Amino acid sequence: MHPPRDTAAESSSIVAWPTLHPTTQAAYNQILWNHGLAKADVARRLGVSRTRMTTVGRELELAGLVSAGGRGAHQAFGRPGDILVAVPDRYHFLGVHVRARQLVAAVIDMENVVVWGADAIVSSLDASVLLEQCERWLAEARSSGFRVAALAICGSFEQLDDAPVGLDLHSIIGESDRIRLSERIGGPVWVEDDMVALTAFEQWPRLDDGQDSLALVSVGAQIGFGLVADRKIIVGAHRTAGRFAHVPVAPDGPLCPLGHRGCLWSVASVASILAQSGAGSLEEVAERAATDADADRILSAAARGLGAAVGHVANLVDPDKVVLTGDARQLLEGRDDEFAGGLHDVALGALPLVELADFGFTEWARAAAALGLYRTLGGDGI
Image (cartoon, rainbow, N blue to C red; front, side, top):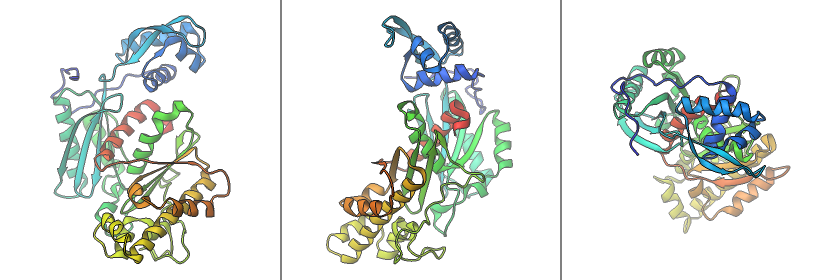
């Protein structure tokens, strides 16, 4: 599907999202979540009258956010109701993920489908260089006809060592830089931790399924955590919540760069696994483990440590679900018993549902774009 052409497509400015009453915004979210709903169903979910819902539906249609999708049987009362469906290409969202000097961009539509992408290597990790590239991509996306309503830039907010993937994006792009860029492009710009973006990507679309809480663990060179409680992403008073990689999981484990013995980072991060094994990749460690007792021991300890960390999270948050992503699937391959052992050693109550999710590098840009979408729609929840 080709996006609607925009008369201001050559501009590098943001297309303003319409100002909606909170009830109207909530109604739109329900329609978007459910891929279309009858007006009567939306009214019932929001606790508003059918007369009010008629007005809300008209406001959404005038804003170009929904269209009438036909008529269907009203599930609760057995009478027909007008179906409203979201217009997926009315607005778009640009996400940029910063990983050392490699930047990846993605534009998504209202249904979180990637419709445009790009990547680049920048000359330096300087705010002016990074933001200039973001503006360039915004102009390219707009010139391609995409109505971009927000820009989100994501990357690691923590640097534990000299690893290039451990850059502290927050120290590079400060609040004053974000505000200046927002003023230049005339719309919202967010600079956020990539784990917050990924957590929003995993959690927000599932709110209508009753998923009120979530813990997300991303295993890679570093280990990241995202937490959701009472339908809100926990970012903390200083926006540093989720720094859980140094929780103790193995009393006899190796030391981490911060001097912690047997913390999750020292046991289960890919950086530590490679340092312990002398291998060049996690794949190599896994191959060695079939015949090498040391490699097997390292991966077994990593699986048990990851299980223990999930147990700590279960005790602290009691989430509906724990999502393991990044290199977690490869790390846990054939080591379910070790993971379960670590989890049972620590967890004191009900065990959460644990789900493995594959999430490639380019998907981080999509998660950043999704953060822009979800913040536009959800506001305080993210």
